[in-house]
Length: 219
Image 1 (cartoon, one colour):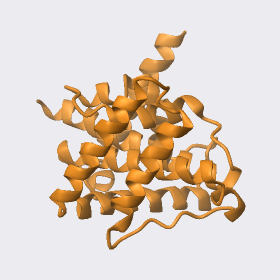
Image 2 (cartoon, rainbow, N blue to C red):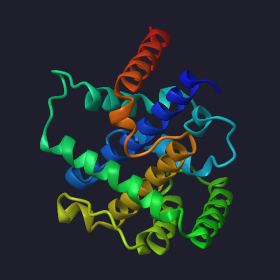
Image 3 (cartoon, rainbow, N blue to C red):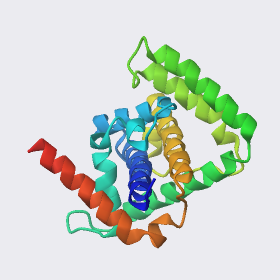
């Protein structure tokens, strides 16, 4: 695999991460999932554990359009998406998920348990949609019983009235599990907490090209 392919895979994994942070923020602050297609892509990525490529994990680049736009924004910024407190909040979630992934690597038994739980839920999802409340609830429980017990925990900011609703709480936990999945992919492709800084230009150029290809395919 050449360097361009590595950067592309890292871009896709980072876009997956940023997409989950946006959706978590949306639920916590608005009480609902507006970007339903992005939500489905993120949840489906949890179950795609035997894919040959990073792109297959997200069922193609199109499912990461939101994450790619966010990546371009955070690396470059646009007048359409000015830097705000909410941007900083998403970046906090982003690095928190990377930290969780690093901790998780130190617990092979927990990794095995998560894998078994995902496989069990994937079998159940064959009879329901992957975003069915029962499937999402199972993923949320898996997150709560495993990753949420690590020394470091992500503190989600938002409206407590939204976060206390069972469906929203389940959606947030399932999305955090999806975020850890993307963080694992980033690590497997040689990326980490310094990737955004060290490869900023290459990441931005690659993300912009991918977004352009999506625009071209939809025209």
